[in-house]
Structure formats: C-alpha cells, structure tokens
Length: 310
Image 1 (cartoon, rainbow, N blue to C red):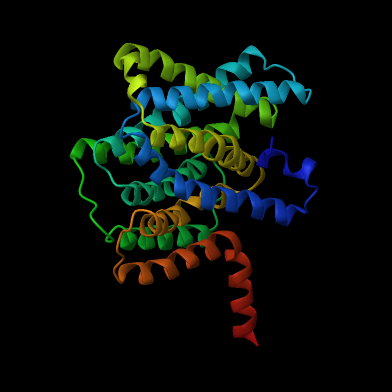
Image 2: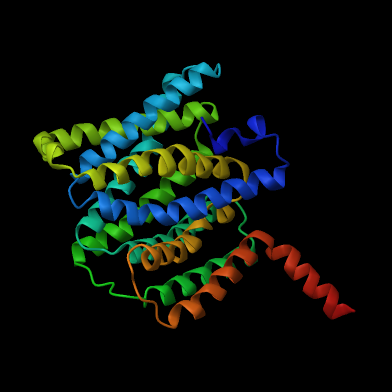
C-alpha cells in the first residue's frame, strides 16, 4: 500500500521531498474529491456513503498497521482516536456531503473549506503556540483569493446547506488540532483507529436514519466515485494530511484548502464543462502568494530586508 505516512521508509526521500509529495497529494487529490462527492451523492445515501468508505478504510489500515508490526492502541489511545475520528470523519465529512446534497456546488464547498486554516491557527494560538505573522498574512491572502474564486459560476445554496458547509471546516480544525495534542498510536494505527471509529459512528447513524435498501439504487457512476474517494481521497490523501499534521506546522498542513478551490474549478471546467470568468485570474496569484507566505514567509521577509539594507 502506498501511504504518504510511510514515504520516509518506502521511498527514502529527503525531508524536503517528503514534504512536497505529501503536500501535492493533498493539494491535487482533495481538490478533485468534491467533484467525486457530487457525483456519488446523486444516488448514494450520504451517511452510508461515508460510513462504508471510512469503515472499510479503517479495516484496511488496521491490517496494514498490524502487518507492519505496530501495536494495538491502549484504551486511552482508542478514546483519543475516537474523539479525533468523530470530529473529522463522522461530523465534518458528513457535513460536507450533506452540504453538497443540499445544493452546495463543489467549487463553493472547496471555497468554504478555506476557513479551516484560520480556525486551526486560532486554536494553535489559544493553545500557547506561536503563529508567525507571515502565516497570518498568508492566511488572509488565501481567504481573499478563495472569496474571489467564489464569484465563479453559480454558487447559490440553501441556508441549511450553507450552515453545514461552514460547520465542516470548524469541526475539522478542532479534530486536526486535537490530533496534534492527544496521545495517539503510531501513524498507520492512528489513521486506522480514527477512520474506524468515525466510520462505525456513521454506520450507527445511517442504520437509524437512512434505509439500507437505498444502497441497491446506487448507480455505476456513484460506485466509481465512491471507490475513488476510498482509495485516493482517504487511503492516500488523508494519510498524507495526517502525516503533515505530525511533521510540519499547522499553517503548512492547512494550506491545502487554498489550492483545493482552484483544482476544483479546473476539474469543473475540464469534466463538468463549466465556464470561468476573469475572477479566477485575480484569485490564483493571491493563492500563490498565500502559499509562499505560509511556507517560506520568514525567508522571504529576511531576503527583502537584506535587499533593502543593501
């Protein structure tokens, strides 16, 4: 299994390239998952879609972790993983699907997700960690770029769908911050327990709310989208994100949310035949500037100061 969490063991890349591979997996793959979710929810019951996806992913990762020799978590670690998985997998991911089911477009959903790094930076600051000024500047630039992207296409939605859309990054940010602070098992085992816990919560909720017979009406296209979400969106990209949370800053780990809207729009143009206006050409430079400030802000400021002094 290819896992971004194990890049350093399987490919023996340098730290810089491990970071780049993990970031681009999250940037590109997650930017396409919103379109895949939109395809899947046309006929897939939303709760069952996420419940089956993450439960199966959790089982696969559990077998992988045990095969690699990782120990089963302690009771304390199971509890912590259930908290993180409940927030990120059960609550946040189901809010994303519910929002799109209510009519939120994939581009708008990706745009709303850009609020996540702001929340994560806030929790980090409240937790006593220092957030560089350049990261705050980058976050503001990224949100500005995303807001411009929101002017592309038809982004009308119901108030209930919009509420779910904005609740998703809030819950995701709390779970992301908790995963950095709580006692969790090894990387692969942490992924397994979080996904399994969140997936099983979804199974319980789906059993109570959605009729199981509805799974028989899922179309071939929806199943293909589901498999894409399972393999690429979860087993590969989500592993990469969890690796980033443990190996880089909160701002860098959350920078994917500024790139995803651009990727989502490109997918919409190429596959969905959407038409872009001029807003995208103003938004993309802002997003590029946001990434530069988040990832290389202190170095850029130092370079500018040296040039100015010279």
